Length: 249
Length: 249
Image (cartoon, rainbow over all chains, first blue to last red; front, top):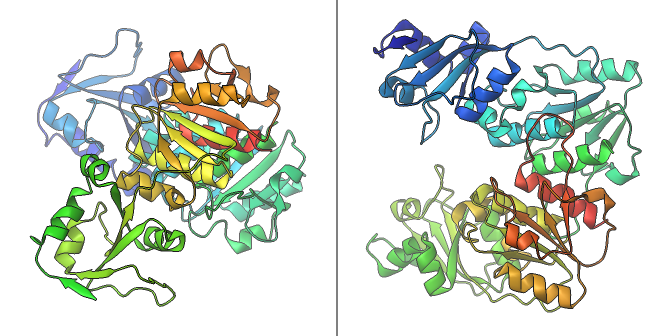
């Protein structure tokens, strides 16, 4: 097993740069942290490039790293790569793969969601609901942000997540007669009035402002979830769960 | 308006102590932070005891503080009370009121949820779904933790939230023929098999371990939400939203 002791090693410098979106975009790679995420990356197999492990940590014996290089580093190097207060001492560098979505029938479109915990939870929820593809529009927090990865709990390795222009995607689906549902508080239908179907796209939006007006104007229909109590709204990830599980039925 | 300049003023010391559960329990009061939460406390009216405002902040002109004392403090004092990185400079001390739940028909029971963001989002979701009462069992993060309050976005002022023994509550409701639904991955029915009803209790549990086995053994029925994709589970607040909106229909 390769061993790195110097925090100035070029590989260490490169890994640290992966904490920034700029370098992730440039290199086409991202860093995941923690046993669960590294294990999910290993299971999926195609995207993982190398495993980084602190000298204080043993790889679980059930893991089969196969031909994936494992690099041992000092505790100091390991901690310098972490985004968390209690680092687990294990990381993987993964490839951002161009997603194949030819066969996709169900979509979650995300417009300008800001909070990484919300975005990650929405990706995890889309995965659970069996959605084929997530498309993330302009103004949304980066898909490969460490907190997004953590909240998604490995779903990045389960379904394609694409950055794209939501207007173009809406046009493309409507040409195929796939209904596209926005979410809005005004001028919208109660979600339970919509028939469930094998193919659809749901659009959810920014925590404060919702889905952009220009996007809502180009949907097949817009939906709302009724508020029966006194709260002003639902959390966007909770709303996503309610709608996806309803639409999929 | 009363003005406090010294960080050693006894009132300031007392407010700071409210950042701990111990002092909240002892004094029967809690502190809320930020314009939205203070406004929700003012609207509800019965629980608010005093408003604390930084000398750099103006109260919004639409607010009617009525007879609620408003105390102006220095920026230093204001910041010392904050749990956030960008304090808004406005707080309210509120009374923990013994909740009236005689008429309640719908309940959310929470077993050992650890993450304050999850608990707050669950309280907000129960409020949105029109649930009458939330009961929080042993091992759950404190209801009045600053992050729980922030995530619940004012729902603490909209519905009773009680600490209680879930076993006693289950017995009490079952005596009244109110069905109590646990959530479990094994030995459970798919949630869409359950008939919706005017009165029920739903139990959701710990992020890692779910609802305790002893509790699941005493429910009317246990439910699960199917996972159609590859994720292992749903976030507990998302699951709560899916189930409450289904059961309420």
